Every structure is written in C-alpha cells, then in structure tokens.
Length: 167
Image 1 (cartoon, rainbow, N blue to C red):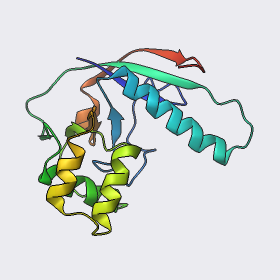
Image 2: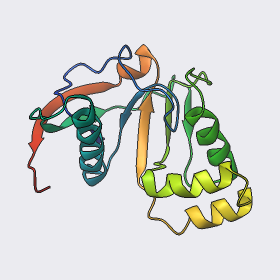
Image 3: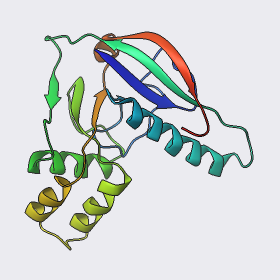
C-alpha cells in the first residue's frame, strides 16, 4: 500500500527520535493514504516553522513509502470516529507520553476543523454522543501512525516530491 508523509524535510529513513507529542494517536511517525491530507500537513508544518524561523524559505515535501502490513504487529484500527476513538484521541492529545503499546494505529484524522469540535467536548459544552454525531458530518481522512522500530520496518521509502506553493 502506498502511504504519504507530509513534511518540510525529505525523510528517507523514518525515525522515532524526533517526533511531536500531543498528537491524535500519541508520539509516532504519521502517514496517510490520502495525498491531499499529506499536502495539508505540509502547510501546517511550514506555518509552524515560519513562526519559529522568521522569513526563511521553507519547502514542503511529500515523502512516499510502500507499507507492507505485518500481522505479527499489534495494530489498533479505528474504522470511523467512535466513542473509543474520541477517548483515545482526547487522551493522547493531552499527554506528552505515549499512552499505549500498539506498534501501529490507524484511524480518522482529527484535523483543525475536527479539533474545534473536540475542544467543545473537552470543555463540556457537548456530550460524547453529540460530539461523535458532529464528527460524522465531516469527511474523515485516514492516518496511519507508526510507534515502534518494528512498525517502522514495515515502511520502505520510494521517493520524495516537492509541493508547489500553489498546492
């Protein structure tokens, strides 16, 4: 299966060393099967870097990999936004620590639009049921996160493409 990682750098060898925390599925290497989602991630990452490095020319890249599933790995797969998914995302976004022992986690992306809905839930303005109902109105794009060296070994680098500014 072809997967994409949007970044401001070329990533031929994914690493678990330099990763963000407080992400949907915890500290890990994040990919998607949707190239448009990967492009959105490049915009987000570029925006963050421009805030930190005022005025530098930051490029955007789509790193492309081949993912081969390994049945021996511990994989959590959320097919859609459910109460379990919401609880899992909510806990991971609040923690600096990896809160699970899965090698790979798959499921919907809680992007910035979705996160506004999650924030209403977090602040007790909406119930869990209403939050799930609201989330199901969004087009949910997938993400696949890799959390262990064994998981990273299922990814083989293919190539990197630079994203044009108008994309």
